[in-house]
Amino acid sequence: MIFRFEKMIPLPLLEQDTEGSEVWEAPSLLIEQGKSYVVEAASGRGKTSLLSVMYGIRHDYQGEVYLDDDNISSFGWKKWSALRKNKLSVIFQGLELFDDLTSLENILLKNNITAYRSRDRIVELARALGMEPFLNRKAGILSFGQQQRVAIIRALVQPFDFLLADECFSHMDKENTFKAYELIQKECSERNAGLVLTSLNETDLPGINTRLML
Image (cartoon, rainbow, N blue to C red; front, side):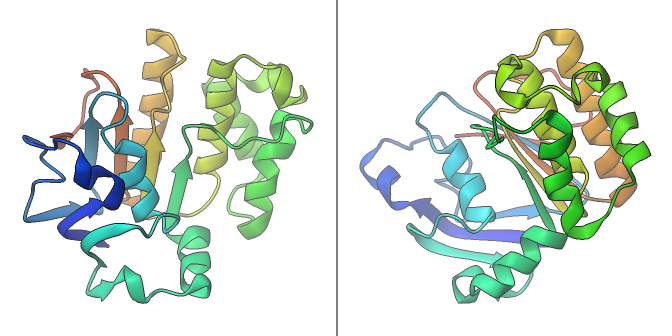
């Protein structure tokens, strides 16, 4: 899978100064499966908007966006539903967890759609991120950094060709950030999936193919 952006920019950014942006000022930009990208910019420069367009939940943009050879503006809700079930996984900046459900219940809500991972594998993923002791605790009482790790696990228990991760390490210390990133890279490598990370700050994560400044 390849995303191709042709002079694409969200409409709210048209009134902002985007000079120097390697995304909004690019005549054409490819984001390819099997490669890792980090999009770095200060708040308000459109990082979340970029991922929202790729995930099909934002449509207010100028220009054209293609997924392989198809213009995504032609996709209906059934097409987007199928893509989000099997091809695109996302870690939302706001996480979108259910506070009254346990960590495990939040993860299973996603996994039950495709039964992609076994219960044992989910526990292994949680153990890798130090979250196994918290699987039966309600998400609402966890710290935001712990919630981020739950959201990462949830995103990894579905099939995908692209993982879109919106500031998913913002509330983690360096050790937990590298553990989570290592797990994400391992999963993406095993699936030959593309990874698009956004970050407020310049990152020193290994294995990134392309860095884009907004």
